[in-house]
Length: 267
Image (cartoon, rainbow, N blue to C red):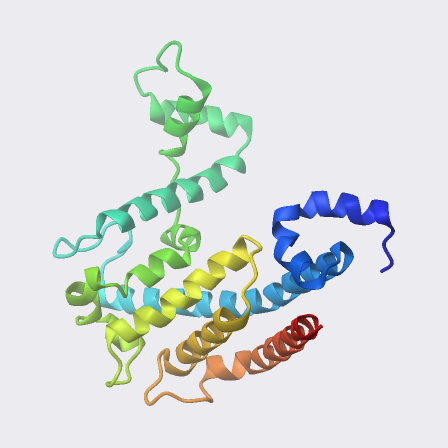
């Protein structure tokens, strides 16, 4: 798309000179920098599609595993007495619970919201209570399913379960079964999940994942899809088959984009 000078000037402000600085330095052109910036977003969207599928698969396999291991209903919010979440996970679960309740609260009519006052304040609503506090007290009375709370938890929570904090309580007792190949250590799994997590966060904030970071992210994704619920690891696991085309596509796009960047470096 052809852009005139006013277009380029305004778009530079919209995208921000800081975001475009490296690309402008490379190309010597604000217009070319804007075009390359859009390509990084398209590449990031393709990679995000893959990381999203990996995150969903990992989350569901962990939940399946822990559900059987704990063998109690509502294991996320009320795990057995012999197990306790570490403080970071307790905070994430509490935040996810509140988010799930917020989502349900937003669907209620004004009459339904007001009806929650009877549960929140059985002795009558206190005078001069703020609207915010009243809404918070109402939300605490909303029952949400464990599945809705799980859906609010991010990859940070799931990858944390493979950290040293849970080596004895989760990895050795049960989570090793999610990556059952006997030669794998928890630390190796954690390293690959951390790589995916870091790149996923960059993508979520519209930051580029290129060069070495892109290569290492693809390797981490390939590790997960070949090892998750698989022993021995395989290039033809169901998850690997599902993502094969997407990985080929995003790798081709990355190669083409990196080659285009190289043409500017040669110049």
